[in-house]
Structure formats: C-alpha cells, structure tokens
Image (cartoon, rainbow, N blue to C red; front, side, top):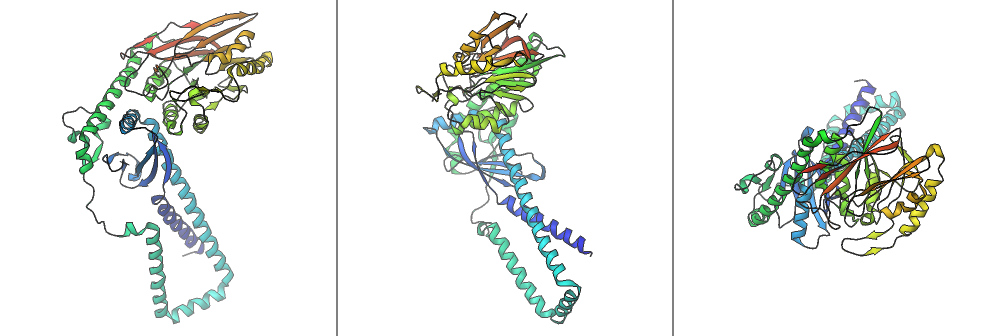
Length: 503
C-alpha cells in the first residue's frame, strides 16, 4: 500500500472512531420547556423523556436518519407545585415544534463538534506517524523490518499486549456500566393509547409509548388529566389555525412592489397561538415579523421555550424585536439574539428596506409583582428615542418605531419624527391614529395581546381574551396600510378592515 493511501486510511479510521466515541458519550445541559435537562444522543431511533421516579418514561419515534435518537433527562424546575408543573409541561408539549427544533440543533452541534474533534485527532495521528516515518529514513525502516521478522514470535506477544491495552482504553471510554451485562430486564414499552383506551388521541400522541412499571400504573390518573389538557389545547389552537384559510379572502393582498410585516405583542408564553399567527402571516404574504415584547411572563431562563417557538414558526422570516417589561432581566434579549432576531437598541437599523428605531422596555415587572424601575424611566426613554429619531436626515427618516409601552413613543409622536409608531403592553388595541406634520403623517398604533392574556400569564388551553395580530403593508420602506386579524376564544377568527396609511 502506498504511504499516502495508508495515511489516508489511518486518518479516516481515527476520525470515525474518535468522533463516534465522543458523540455517543456526549451530553449537553439545556433548558427544555419549564425544566433544566440533560440531552444525550442515542442510536435507538427514539426521543426518550426520563421524567423521574414518580412519572413514567415516555418515548416517541425520532424519525431521523441513521436511527439517531436522543435521551432527555428532565431535571429541576422553578414550578411551585406538581400540578402547576405538569399543566405547564403539557401545554408546552401540545405545541412542541420550538423545543423539537432546539433539541435537533443541540444534537447537530454535538455531531459537528465531535466530528471536528475526531478529524483533529486523526490529523494529529497522521502528522505524528508521517513525521516518525520520515525521521526514521529508508535504511532504519528496513532494519526495523528485519528486526521484527527475526523476533516475530516475541513481536506477536507484544502486539497482543498492545491490543489488550487498547481494548481496556476503549472500555474505560465507554464506561464500566456499558461493558457489564444489564442487572435488570430491559424496559417494556406500550403505546399510550392502550394505557388509556377510553380516550381519543391525535396522530402525534398515538406514536407516544410509555414505559411499563409501577410509576406508570400508579400515575394513570395523572396521565389521563394531562392527555385531556393536551387534547383541549390542540383542539382550540388547531381550529384557529385551520380557520385562517376560511377568512383568507378577507385579508388584504400586497402588490408586487409592497412588503408585509406581521406585528405580535404580549404573547406571555402562549406558544399555542404561534401556529395561528404564522398562518395569518402566510395568508397575508408577510415575510417580516415585528415583535413588540412581553413574549414571557417573568423573563426567567426557563421561558426560552417561548422564543424557541416563535423562531420555529417564523424560521424563514426576518424578525425585529424589543423586550417588554415582563421580559426584563437579560435572558429574553439573549434568547432573541441567539435566535437571530434583530433586537432594537436605540440605534436606527434597516431591515428589508424599512428603517427601524426602538428599544426594550426599561421597567421590570415579574409575574404578579409590582413594577421595578430600570436604568431609566419610561419618560426619559421617550425623550431619548425622540432625540435620536428627530436627528435623522430627511432621506433616512425613521419609518417604524417599535417599543413595548406606548408611553415610550409619546415624545416622538408629538414631534412627528417617525412615520409609524408601534407598541403593545395595554392588552387592547388603540388606534391607528394619524396626525399630519407638514408634508409628513405620523400614525400611532398599539396592538392588542396576541397571546389572549388577561394578565401576565397566557399559557393555557384556552384564550382569556381575543388574540390579536396585525398585518402592516409597506411600499418603498414606508407604511401604507394596517389590518388586524383576531383569534376569538370561541375558536372563530375575525378580520378587521384594511386601513390605508399616508396620503
């Protein structure tokens, strides 16, 4: 075999072995739903959830190439009690696309990291072998070859010793637990629908299997309640999503020269509404998402699922966002940036030909707690943003200002320095209201709560209030029309009149 071919084979073998060993033994600590969790890859073709000693293990086919699966060891949470925790988990599980997308991304990153590590190790081994081969020279290699043949028997014994050492090393990498025979019988799985034959299941839930055992038998009542909560959630939000097609003829369609953005605000963890919102965006020809904040209820790290869901449902969209007073603390803005959102931070920025200005809310409000002042007041933020907007040259006039609290755009509205000023926060629609400033018109508009939130928490199998999204039409970077589409708690969808903007 030619030296280059031998080195190539050595590189390939080392890369594959080291990469695979690293991958199957890798794990990553992440936040999934309302929990911290440890994710590790498997090759059984299933996504398996280990929910601890009280509840049964669950699994569902992963439908991935190479039968790559994942084990999710669900761990601590900040929920106050078991009922609250289980209800929260079930509602998140009823709209799992965001969390599934996050887990896939984690596993893919593990595969890439270990492939790179394997390739690096393979390259190092090839360099070392090639260096030693070259350093020995032809004459010394020939001498060693003859020496090996003269002591062939002794060499075979040494080779066996080296092989045993290698096997011991591999065993230590895999871990003693993987090398010992199992001391308990393998887990027996049964479909969830057989555990609860009296209940109806959708296609996704029919694929779920439950580990047989004491925890499953003892927790049948709990599981039945969770399945019922899941069913109610998927029924309502599925009906809302399907209803959009029926009202699509009432939705304004843009011309070839126009672009459309979808405005959402005050989702307050209600990821169930995201499927409805994305269907409205599709029906209205939107390619841009504007998020006016309060995607969460308390801005905690466990609420990453809300941003994950928004990213998954609008994965082909550019997203312009601000954080609301219930998103304060830094976690939500960090999640947004990691998801690729353009988070406005008091500097003008152009996205899809539209010139934006805005900032996240400076006030911090927890779930059920009073407002806590931030680094500045709303009034100060309003004046500061107005100064930035009014300092722009005429050819770079701010097209759209996005804030959470409408008080944050008050000064800009009074001075007429932006064409469209958007907010949320009030959980009710205000406007659109248009005023003329010389040759310019300024429109203020507050979107109602997209998540149907009566207060600061909207995650649930029903809407507490109508859930509103707004389609905004732009032409040449300027806003030229608004139209609301509203999800009703009854499961109906209503479309507001199209409001032209500008003269």
